[in-house]
Length: 323
Ligand code: AMP
Ligand code: MN
Ligand code: MN
Image (tube, rainbow, N blue to C red; front, side):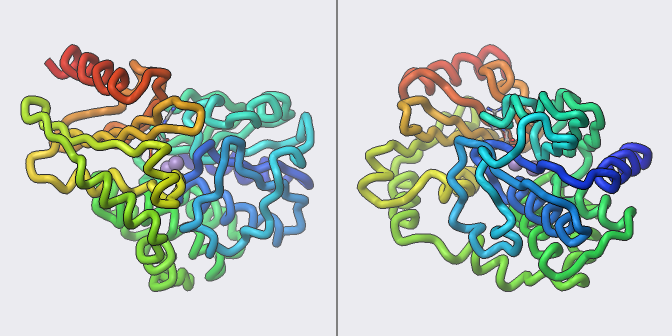
């Protein structure tokens, strides 16, 4: 791990111009690690093209993050960049339409913490024991001696707090808590982060949450709790999909849940399926079987079937694999 950290530092130090990006449907760790690294490198005088790949709707709960003005559109990223850094991406498909530009880079760098990471780059800094990609960016900054200020710390803490489910998931351990403590010491604005990420819901999303909770179903034999959100729900409540990132955490709170599932209907009619698990049950393998991926306890995929078809397919796969 030390040599990979140093390899990434050397690559970043020697580049005058570079492209940075994270995954489609960005989350707090994707946005936080991206903005933190963009801020640090911009201050070191680099020409930074930081961008989120299409399809990307910037989640409104992260609008407060410093460095957002450094984001450019994916079209502005040059073809064949000298250095391209993918953050929080387990494989090249996660880069959406930026995949080709990543593959055309002279040097491609992969910084990630997914255990199913395909090590698709020239330099792979992949540590599945890390709580988040933001934790890895923290380690890069500390090792290199680059400047860590309150703005950078706020971005990284946001990545940590969201990927650990507010320091409650299994990826929370001594290391994640120590890094959080260091980020707090560096000036991360914990109060602002809590307010913006967890207590600034739109009224529309609050009503959408109500609908999703109202229709929760439980399948006792599998310890499975599920619900769904349709395009009609989004239209009628005025909520948007990026706001629903932690809706699934509410499903998991039902006593006896081993697997929580949220089906989200996309604009194109496909269904994004989010999976969470606990008590030794792993959902990563099921997500991979169905064309997606993720962590042992947090994974997802996209289904071409309609809502009820997606449910039947998932249940069949679960019953086959979880006996
Ligand atoms: P989500 O339910 O969308 O929050 O995703 C949960 C986890 O699964 C995250 O770690 C994602 O990186 C991963 N994931 C979701 N969808 C996919 C996919 N289509 N391919 C690979 N990983 C995915
Ligand atoms: Mn992510
Ligand atoms: Mn992550």
